[in-house]
Length: 379
Image (tube, rainbow, N blue to C red; front, side):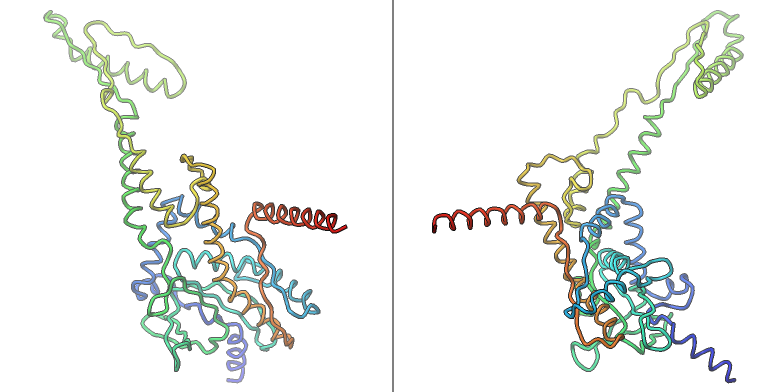
C-alpha cells in the first residue's frame, strides 16, 4: 500500500489541471454547444483559406516583446527562463505559448493556459496551452472572484489551484466567456463555399470539353444497311484519338459520309462570380480587420486609404497586446516568486512596423535640427 501511495503522490505533482483525461469523442458528445461551436470555427479556418491566413498574419504582426524585471539584477535569469521554458510536448519559450494563446483567443474567443509546477513546489516545470471548452467559470464569493471547473463528461470538477490557471476572454458576455472574432461568419462562409462549389461543377460541365459526334447515313440502301457498323467504327476511332491526345500523341480523325462534330455546351458561358465573391470577401475582411493588400487581394485603393487601413490594423494589434499583457506578467511574476525574488515585471513590446520606426527617427531628427538652430540663434 505504501508503494501505491508513493506513486500517486509522485504523479499528482505533474498533473495538468486544465486537461480532460478521456478520449476526444466522449468529451465531444457530452460537452454541448461549446465544442460544437469550436469545431465549427475549426472547419471555417480549414475550408476558407483567407480566414486562416488573416488570423496567422494577425498573430505574426502582433510583434515580439521582452519581459523586463524592475530589479535589473534578475533580468538575465528572467530572460533565460522566458527563452527556455517548455511549452506542451514540443514547444519551447514564452513566444510559442503566447502565439498559441492568441490563436485561441482570436479563433474561439477564449484561451486557457496553465503554469505547471514540479512535484517539489519549488520551480516552474513548464507552460501548457489548454482547451477552452474544457473549462467552466463561475462566480465566487465576490463578483470578481473566479472559480474554475474542469468539464469531465457530465461532471464538473473544481480545480484545486486556480492561481496556476491563465484565462482570457475577448469581449466577454454575462457568463464570463468570450466571443470569437469569427462569430457571424459561418452564414457568409456557407454562401461563399456554395459559389465555389458551383464554379467547380460548371467547369466540370462546360470547362471540360465534351464532343457530340453525329453520323447521318444517306438514303442509299447499301450505306443505310451498314450504318450501325460504321457508327461503331467511328466511335472507336474517335475514342482512340482522344486517348492518344492524353498521352501527347496527335491523331487525325478521318470519316466518310455525313459526320457532324460539335462541342457540348460551347454556346453557354460561365457566370461572372467576381462581384458576389468580392462582396462576401469584403464582409469577411471587415470582420477580421485586415487590409486587403496584406492578403494578396489587389483591390483598387489609394495611398491614403492604405495608410488609414494600416492605422486601423495598428489599433487592433494594440488591443490584442493588451489582452496578452496580464498573462505574460503573471508568468513572469510566478517565476520571480518561485525563486524568492520580491520584484515584479512588465512587458516591453517591439514597435509594430518599420513605418513607426521611420516616423520616430524623422521626428528625432527634426527635433535635433530645431535644437541646433535655436542654440545658434542664442549665440
